[in-house]
Image (cartoon, rainbow, N blue to C red):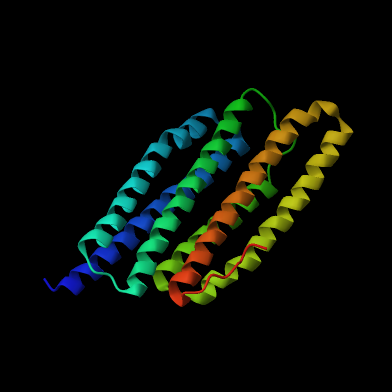
Length: 219
């Protein structure tokens, strides 16, 4: 097989693995927030147990990147694609960690009734999942427009976080008994905000991969 052709096939396989890992962490976000909304211990433990697979996937992708660098002779543009993959996999692993932290919050809330039905938190989770999907699509499609659009979507997540913060603050002021749970729910939203930041980081690396220029999306 032509060396260059084999290299591109390896790159395509690397991208497929990245998307697979992205689907895994996206599912972890969904299940973690679902476990919280339903205060469901079994779903929470499913998320925590699944983190090992996410970590294994990270190691596999990093190893693939290193093999490509060591065994092939990538051009400058290829180096950026591989280097970006190594950055993306780190962000994906951290997103998985945040999903686990949300699931652990569910475990700490066992036996408690939520202060109110969760509406905005699942909506925030959906927004972050959409951002993650867009970030990975921008990588595979090498699409600057999709990557740059993440900045505006991140602003929307930040705005929703501020809204939730104010609502929880009111609950804490209304009754000191609400403080413990309100703080935990606030931390969950902070984790979702961080997930959005990681998706934005991926967008920044994609812009660098395509253009060779670092552009700050997270102001």
